[in-house]
Amino acid sequence: MWPFKRAEVEQRAISQWPWDIGGPPPYATRTVSVDRALSLVPVFAAVRLLADSIASLPPVLYKTGAHGLPVRQPDPSLFTQPSVHGTLPDWLHRAVVCMALQGDAVGLVTARDYDGWPTMIEWLDPQQVVTQDSNRFGPGSYMQPLWYWYGQPLPPDGLMHIPWFTMPYRVRGLSPIAAYAATAHVGLAAQDYAGYWYDNGGVPPGTFQNVKQTVSKEDADLITARVTARLQTRKPLVYGIDWNYTPIAIKPHEAQFVETAQLTATQIATIYGIPPEKIGGTTGKSLTYSTVEMNTLDYLTFSLRPWLVRLEKAFTKLFPRGTYVKFDTSEMLRADTKTKAEIAALSLGTPSQPWLTQDEVRADYDRPPMPPPPEPPPAPIAPTNTTVGLPAPAAPMNGQQPAAVGATSKGSTNGSR
Image (tube, rainbow, N blue to C red):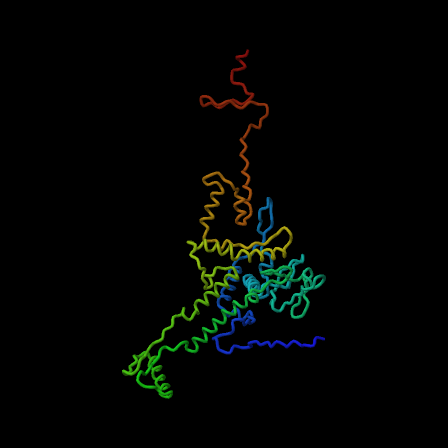
């Protein structure tokens, strides 16, 4: 054994701040619940915008017809009454809210038709659903996950799972609230601090100073009460020569409430992939679209389209092979009908040569091909002489009636003799 023992190094750590810095320590992290996150205005606005936009678009079932052209099918029962509570827009709204807040939507099939296809699906609270996928092989792995709801096992073939932000070899989607808890916490802290600031009076409206003598605490309290009462009545303040009143004005941007709120809104909009100006944020650029149609098209293409594709692919699995689901987005582009009509006219060759057929143009609008034109009626048949082998009667001359066929005129016999 070594004869000398190394002295232990004393370690110290600061477990608390020795001074008040006006808020929580910068390294502090807190778990933000879904209900708590929804109290943040940008989070609520972003989730509401996505859920309302998608819920207003009806899903349509199509079947691939001849030449690959889509043929619209009647609305299935799943898109007529998908839940025992609410309507189809309410059902879609719940699914998007689950995906936007929890990272995925988990539905339980509650009714099927005669062929076994789902007709009703109830969305479960993702917080109450536990998924075991950490094993490397077998049950409880990524290939064979186990699902539990309130501790009860769920059948995999009776579930509908739609993840939003997926990770490699993970079944459940990533929750944006859990991933960006620090961002939500900063916004909530600024929002709460602003509320406390205004509730407690913020900064004093001004100072009232005596320049000739020192005022005791009792006299100061009495003078403050009188001055406050005078200011609350919006009456002029009258004082002597030995008093100076200096009002204190603070601008909103000096308190950094507006900047913090806009920064939080911009970051939340970036997380959800929506335009920041729609939820109170700023873009930081001067690029703007001159028409409502361009703004709507940009929002539909870059914000809603990724969400719609995930829902369309998940809904398509619920119907027989050869059919597919597609959201009808024509209502969002309804204001751009003139441009679409001009493009369709050019496609059909007005006034130039056509480069698309009518059926191809109709396929772009998810409409079936044109029905074949009706057959023309048969041409009328001209009347003909029904006597076979006999010549037609001669035309009358000088107003006389034509003689009957086979008859001889008077005196013809005598003339022959």
